[in-house]
Length: 132
Image (cartoon, rainbow, N blue to C red):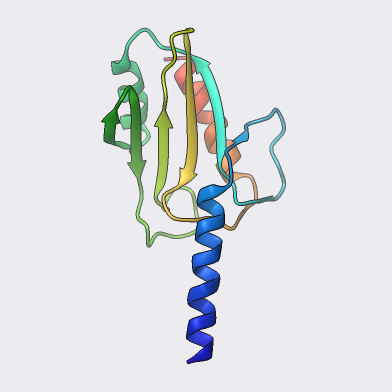
């Protein structure tokens, strides 16, 4: 019984830590190893919101929320693999009036570590949005 309580406590602590840690700036260099990967980036705002929707749809994302100008897209399964292609990922766009489109990328639940896949996905998403 103590093991179950310990496991539940550790999972709860890791989840809370992941949720409260701030998003990291994407940076120029792919990290070889990152703890609790959550990234933020910004690109020039595309001409229309339809372009964002088109890019996200092409990557398998569905729009989940649209409130106060922020849009959240999700794909994957919460019980998915540790692969970024299968795990549930949330991407949130928070448009600004200065012509930029900031966005964040994070796991829907928690990711304790990463070997650069989250960084790479965040970078590729930015590249696709810039070229849309």
